[in-house]
Image (cartoon, rainbow, N blue to C red; front, side):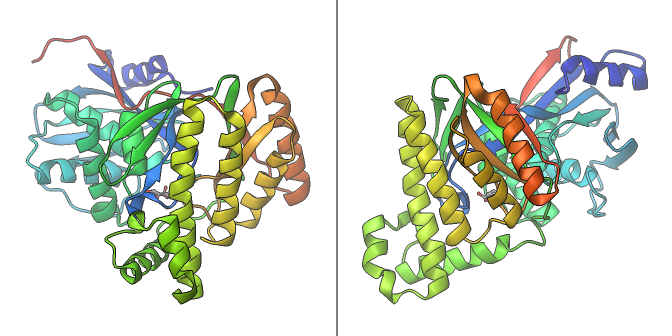
Length: 386
Ligand code: GLA
């Protein structure tokens, strides 16, 4: 069962013996298509999901932040006047967000509260962006400056890059900040223009967690980024976003194998992602599903970020008659895949794919239907300013 505002409030009351002044929530995400395109200034099409990080909080009179994590059953704290990176796990995401906010001149007020979440960690559903965005939403509420989703996403990305040390792009914090219920967002990662597009009628999005994990920091993610940058230099453009399909095809013989594969993925994926948004606008589930399946093949064969487990679960999904298309989602190397499925057959799809994957790999997957949710929000604000 997803965590609820009532649950977050109950944990706060158990700890502090009064209701929280605010409750904030920031969701994880699943990316429908547009993978490894964000750091190439390209297009992505993620949706925020009905799994989130929640913080229930009240202000403090000093400049300390004290947080009890229900999931870790631990309390951690820091001072806004002396932020130091202790590589201390989950609290660093809150500290990094505070650091990033203060670096850009925002005045922060201390607070205390409880943190609870149901975005699985390391699964490729952006639990860290959810945590950073929940922290940003909490600071904005308690410090009383207006919420600006795009600016907050940029600050969370800075925190992730410089405090946590992961060179991720803008997609995860931006969809967590700006998601729209019932919709995915087509994001132009260069201009940060956002266009909500509805899910095709009578379809659901199913997340297929392979139960395999691989950390982002240790992965080949940064290597892929460097390879993409090198390919952009070859084409003499700022980013692979600027390479058209024609431009790419004309140059393909002069590229070395790695550059050909990496750039080939990014150029075609940008194209697929924009087409996918168009299919969604037309309610064309068949076209969207086909593009998702093509995306998976490209990530597997050209970008080389899939894994045996991801391929196995995607194949198990794709053979179901109720499935329009399936692909790995997120950075890859493990974690989750995503499928677009006929709503009326979704339960049967979940049962069948779980069974096939388990028989094939001896791993127990977690497969569930996800609803497209709103981005970060403030749910309770029932007290006058102090
Ligand atoms: C991770 C990163 C994102 C994006 C995806 C791949 O989720 O955090 O910025 O690059 O991988 O599409």
